[in-house]
Image 1 (tube, one colour):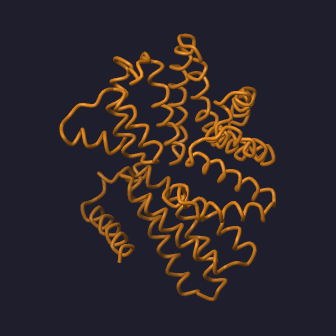
Image 2: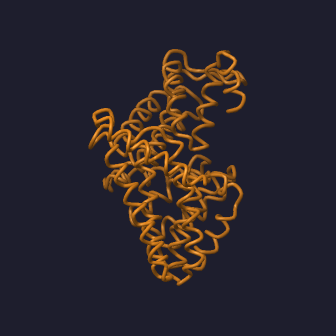
Image 3: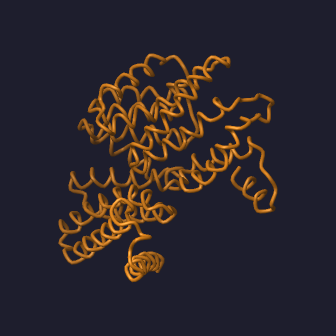
Length: 345
């Protein structure tokens, strides 16, 4: 869909609402959040005005049509750590979904779907009772595809982990395969399952699953999943004394995380991904020191500090880049360019 939609735009041809909807959905599934945001900027006003008609003829009115794009944006906000923004988007989607639910056969999906990002936003923000109330509501729908598709099982499992209930996470994640989903979503569920098993000490099972995921072609092509898998696997290997293998995986994790970060244009999004990058840098330093590679460990420690400093200076909440002096802005840009050149050489 991306090649088709982008080629039409490049030729100056207009996309229908359904084509634009499908293009935004493709960007969401690729976790290309910058293009998703740009796509949604065009899509949302159009859906507000006229909804969209599916190629098969079914038509969604504005409230129903807006639920899923708002949820995409909420999930994107969650992944980059913008939890309050995710909550606002989820609540707007929920309001739309509640209005739309009674107008369609099977319309409960419009009411239920926004509860997934809202549940995770509450869990991240420490609002345990609200998160658990939604989780229990969704779990009560366990006979439906909505709850037991692999992607949704991954979200429910993630919520249990955030709420400190790993055994419940394992149960729901192991049952998530009952409804087969696409390979990307299946990978999301398996990543969560590995994290849950690791958290309760089922280390051999977690390691086996993580090693399978690290070599899975779908995961290797999806850097946003890959860096999580490699970081989790490296932590486990380091705990078991496998420092050489942990080092190899951590170097890949750093590359994967920097690769994702390089595709983002907003400072908030970059900083969100940099949290994972700092975790990889920190563990890599420890692993290198354990192997007697103190000098190289120091180099990575300095590199991690430099990245953290750049992100702090560029953060709009601290020093908006537009308010920095020209010299400081130029130095930040030069640092980022040098890092990019260093990684490609």
